[in-house]
Image (cartoon, rainbow, N blue to C red):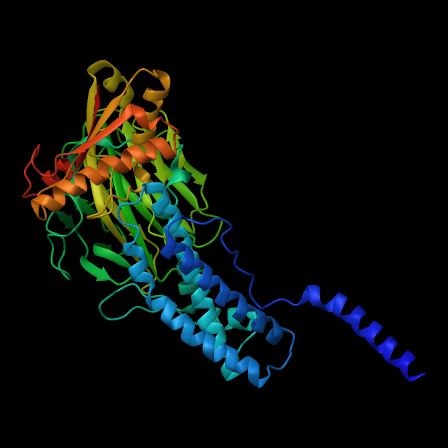
Length: 517
């Protein structure tokens, strides 16, 4: 009788386990461990150990989610895990240095996996501490608490986010577009090859208004621990304009810049926008008789719309449209904005995606010569910054020029500062080069890198060679061009085409040449 009772209890327990075990889940959706290795030992080891610790903590979080009390042995495991996580996190900067000299695609894959591992470690240490202190909240409680917290900025106006926004921003930053070159493989923006204006605000003092701009409002150059370098903050206000020293735009040109935001939330106004105006005057109005403007939404919901409005000969314009564009995540992650004007045609990209392509947006040629920016409908805690504004003549098809002249030189292939990492928005040019090579399989190319004069001569020489090789690697890895058809070289700073004492000249000197051989 006793045995029968025990058997029934065992059977009942087994049934309960069968139904309960599959539902044993932690309070947050589980991160996926990378399925493949990078091929760099330090990176693969870091990723593996990070996710091993993550799995351990995630298991105990699942216990807490079901109300299962933790035993003393469990608490000991969590304490040990915190120590291991701390040590492992401190090794991340050293691992990044192991990426130097690797191919662009391998670097991108490695960086993506490192960021995923760092995200796993961040969750692990936060959760382990909460479990040890008995303070682990449910996901719903955390979200409610975070929604009640208002965004803030400090007195130096450095971008800072409160818990909910920080969590969202970091998740997006960990998947930064610069880590994913291949998603740009079909990107068709081609920047101009003759720099008309460039400003990264590196020559301006923090706290000052930038020297190559004008305004009827206020703004200043800032630094932040969220992004490298100097950024220019534009203060929102009614009819406030920010005007760079551009006074003669050709018929074909491109405009590029990076955007940084702070303090945005689901409460950001549906009218919040960053507007780019192409105008017939440098006055603090849209234009006297002619202008065309594009307003890029920074609202934090899926209802964002890009407003395209033109106005010619004081008679309004044919176009005042609102194009749906959910770019709410992009504007939290330092998006790259690219605009191409080819005579009357205007196109706009946010990162790799083309959102606007209007064939006759510029109704009258040779009347719009000035560029203006404005921001609108922001709260005091919300901020918009820009960097790396580049205006360049050209932006037309380079394929015909390479075929007809046998060589091209372009400063449109951009790299991270002091690095051979290709910035993904440069792949429009690399793609065009690949199309020439695909069209005529007898063509072979020599790729030559050039730098500006900043830094030691020998460093620049090596950097120029590494950058040329990175372009070759992209052609081979992304576009499947045979490596035997490509050779590389670098000239460092020895062959400048412009003045290395100006920002514009340096931008012109940082270039890549393609020569048929």
